[in-house]
Image 1 (cartoon, helix red, strand yellow):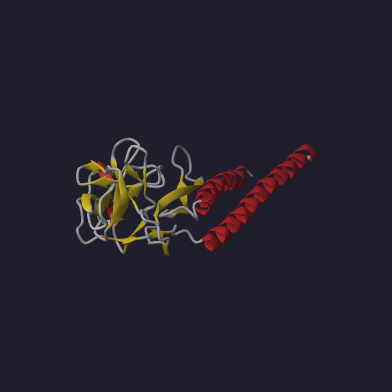
Image 2: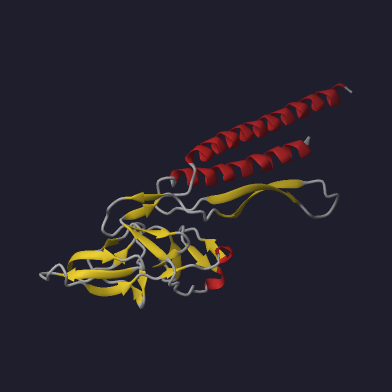
Length: 246
């Protein structure tokens, strides 16, 4: 009975973890540039003394779905979406360089260019600073041009250029902050072929319908494992009564 109980208990625990990861994906279905976390249940044999008769169910993260989301036209002056392959370089909270597809940019009161998550966007020499201007334009190659206050419409000045990279997707890992980084903290080189689409944003690549179906399937799976634990309890009670009769 303990074998059945152990399998059902470990399976129920890992199903809860898988449900949490699926709920996280579903909660970010409207987050700009969000990349879906992939999770799978795997069988893991437990070693130790005695016979190898215990197998634990483990919910392990198998990677990140890096497929692009849908490009949505917004008309926003500071909204940009990466066209095809490529990433926008930003500065993470710990000061390290990281990469994202979230191009919902805005300018802070101090002139720093950040995205919707508050991460400073990196340029040729670090975080990009925008001087006071009447108009800001972002070119397809990431070049940022501004029209200074009081100047003619044709008086555009290049301020900086957004760092766009295109590293090998197999070398990218997603952190808890939702940003992607190269393995061992390496820094990707700028890629001149990466392009932006101004006035547009890339939506999340999470399929809401698939996430809802997965949530229902995981809920039923959890219920089945709880029923197995109940059956194990009932069988144990019956066995105890039989032992008392004998």
